[in-house]
Image 1 (cartoon, one colour):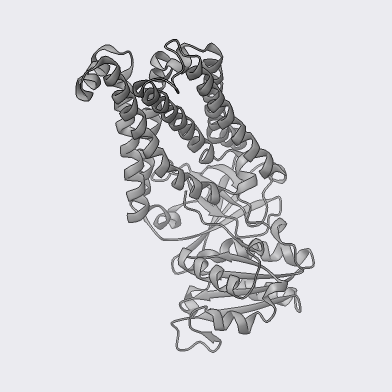
Image 2 (cartoon, helix red, strand yellow):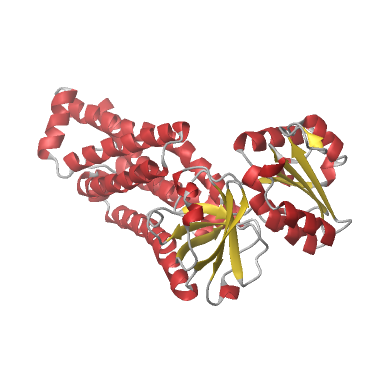
Amino acid sequence: MKKAGLLILLAAQLVIILAFWGWNHVNHLMGNQFTGDAAGQLLAYGRLAGLLAAFAILLQLILMGRIKWVESVFGLDRLSRLHHILGFSLVVLLVLHPVLVTIGHAKQADTGVIAQFVDFCKNWDDVPAAAAGLGLMIFAIIVSIAIIRKRLRYETWHIIHMAFYIAIALAFGHQLAVGSDFTGNRYFAGYWYALYIFTFGNMIYYRIVSPLWKFRKHRFAVTGIVPEAADVTSVHIEGREMASFRIKAGQFMMLRFMAKGFRWQSHPFSMSCLPDGRHLRVTIKQLGDFTGKIPELRPGIPVIIDGPHGVFTARQCHSHNAVMIAGGIGITPIRSLSEELLNTGCNVHIIYSNRNQASIVFRKELDELAAAFHGMLKLTHVISEDPDWQGEHGKLDREKIARLVPAPRECDFYLCGPPPMMKSMRSILLKHGVYSGKIHYERFSL
């Protein structure tokens, strides 16, 4: 119901925008723009492209603003993927608006397109700033796509997104100063102001105010650094009144360690132990510059926490049997989720894939958990590159899943690991007849 309500809310905004736009152009000072000459029609649809582009920009901010009442319904990873997809259509709208409007005004003035564009920049209020903002937005979107593909540094990604906010500020004045949809309709202008206030109000609260308020209340700090494997480290965090910090097994947090070399970045890390109302634990694999420095952290370092986030929780499980498929460091949310499901009486089978025995994280903990829940928890390690391993060999494939999980349609599946592995597992499970709604996963492409 919440998901349907949010989708209806989104559709209602589009209906309102289209209604105002239609009214304004049917009742235009120069007559009905839809039945008039080609210039009027070009201007009408050019303005619509501008309105939809501006709305899409605000929607992008909502999608990636870590806004709790949206994220808790759809999951941050799915919002992230929608954010990436919407970026492509946004480029089209951003280009269509100036092209159609420039051609339309050029036809009305009986002049060339280039001459009309020069006139815009010289004589129209806020157009030069809007043109600069447009160029910056398109640049930010294109470079962001390149960053996703090339997996460049987080700092570069962050700077590009900061540039996007500057572009929004540059373009805002142009909308209300020369946009005839607003200058001729104060109700539409009021609605547009409200959209901006609502969007940025939510962003400021959830991205800045809420994490700082939680830090002031709980005073989160690192209390321990524990090596788990050659390149994996657990970070223990405690604070005041921890019982009131609500987090579920399987969820993740954006952590900002307030120490030199860390404080300018925040990254997502899953809870790797069952929440107990006293302390938090995240377990981090060294995969880059930021994570490579995690072992340098020391007890006492303050931590600002944004979250918790995610819908990869026990609430999604509707079967009495759960199969947890993990690859490498993907065991972190699986570890906490498995224990919570076991405590509810659910039978759990953990299938954990690694290259070698040295890569197994939480090996002792998992063995102890299997012993504590004997008969309810089955633990299967799958090792791909260790000749000394006596158990399951090779990579997870359709044959192994068929053999290890004899009745897949009766189970809920939780997947966490490298994206290619999760994609492969999802495809295999669907071919085994598992309903897609019983396959749960999150990808942290923020």
